[in-house]
Length: 251
Image 1 (cartoon, rainbow, N blue to C red):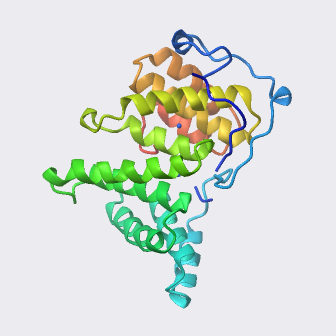
Image 2 (cartoon, one colour):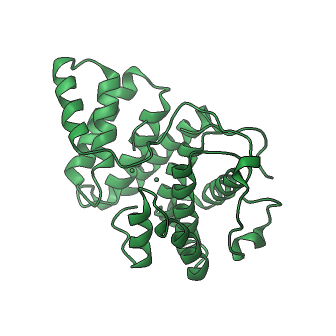
C-alpha cells in the first residue's frame, strides 16, 4: 500500500512508487514530474547537495581533540570517516564504527548516528578484517541499527535511501528482500508525490537505477535512470557516469 502524508528528509553526506503504483510500473521508463505541483517535504536529517571537502574531517577531528567527551563531535567524525571510506578504506570504516559507537552510547535515539553506524557495520562486515563466521552477525547488527533509525523517523527520505542502498548489497541469508522492496516503492512514490531538493531526486534516481540493475536485472531501465543524472549538472553526475561505465566504486 502506498505511503500517505508528508515525508521528511534527512546531516553529512555518501546516497536509494510513482503515481498509481503497480508492480508493473518498474518495467516502464520514468515519467516527467511536475515538481511545482507537489507538496513540500519536511524533516530533520538532511543530506548535503554535494560531497563534502575532505578537509572537513580534519576540522572535526581537531574540534574533537579539544572536546573529547562531546558525543555530537564523535558522531560527526564517525560520519565523515564513513563518507570518505569509499572505495574500501577499511581503516576508515573501523574508525567510523569506533566514533559512532561512542556517540550512540550518549545519544541512543540519534537517527544520524544510528543510520551511519549501521552503514559502517554493513560495510565492515563485507571487508577482509571480519572473520567469515562473524560476518553475518555483524551484518545483522548493522541492519538492526538502520531499522531503528527508520523506525524513529519512518517518513524520512534520506534514512530510507541509505538503508535501501545498503540492502542492495545484503546477502540473501539476512532476509532483507521484503524491506528492500518496501523501501524501493516508498522512495519512488515519494519522488513522484513530494517536492524535495533536486539533489535528493538525483540520488533517488541513482538508487532506482541501481535497483533496476541489481534486483530486477533490467539494464535498460537502469540506464534510463542513470542517464537522467549523468547528463545533468548535478554534483552527483559523476556517480551516474560511473554506473554507465560499470564502475561501482562509489556506491
